[in-house]
Image 1 (cartoon, rainbow, N blue to C red):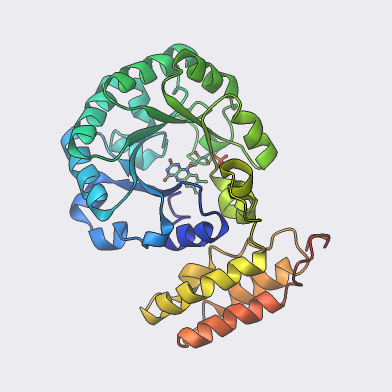
Image 2: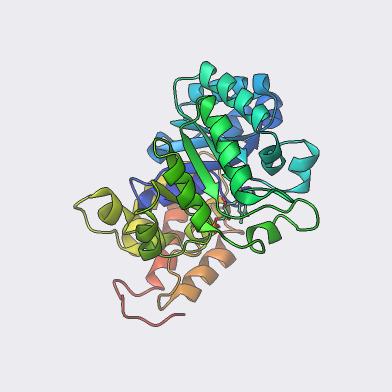
Length: 323
Ligand SMILES: Cc1cc2nc3c(=O)[nH]c(=O)nc-3n(C[C@H](O)[C@H](O)[C@H](O)COP(=O)(O)O)c2cc1C
């Protein structure tokens, strides 16, 4: 998620679930081709499986970026056809390409020819005046013919005129039934549903109708929601890690990253919500958000800072009231 997630967030989430697939935020072809590629694309191999999400419209540029992403080791290359922001529209990519499935098909074909890893597409059910089911089914049919076999569908329209990017994630109603119909219509395709999921029960119900569920905001704001995913959906016998165990798992990483010059707050900003709903959650958040921005110590001091913040939350206290 642009402006929210980065490699530190992904490493953190990976300590909560070993099995969920993680996606980068959208990175444009322009940034990959002309920007600081190592900074934009480098990741820790412990983050795997991780997919690179690209935004763009030019098939040749997308194919080149897919190749670069595959060389970096990403397990999947995902093309963003769902972003409604003005900046993206002015570059003629993102959600506005819902109206041009032939362009998306050419891009997918070029990307598929460039790499061996899967090319997937994330998109909306429709945009603007489009009638939803005809637009959605036509889009998927044409793009599938070009070689895409996994579609991740944000189950609401994007209204490109008049709504902000934020409103476009909240205002148009969610229409899960169209995503279910898509799976019925194209049973050989993998269909992942996205939009509005906050509980594992709701996700389990979806998995009876589609192949996967993608979670955005809830995973960021309440990351512990992922803790039981491996046991529940991937058949892993190990119990969910406790929140304190997750902090422990992060310490070595924090030590390493701070030693490499990463500001501590670049990591801690992602973990403020770890104890949400637990007694002491507010003290944890306050301790990190007050101390990490002015931190200028070494790796061992960073570890001590994290330890101190974690001691403000009682251990293993599942019955505790919300802070
Ligand atoms: C701050 C923010 C940034 C986002 N950036 C991206 C992005 O880079 N790529 C993308 O496919 N979706 C992006 N999204 C949309 C989410 O991936 C997701 O489709 C949407 O929030 C609906 O799912 P949710 O209800 O689980 O959050 C972003 C959402 C937010 C809140």
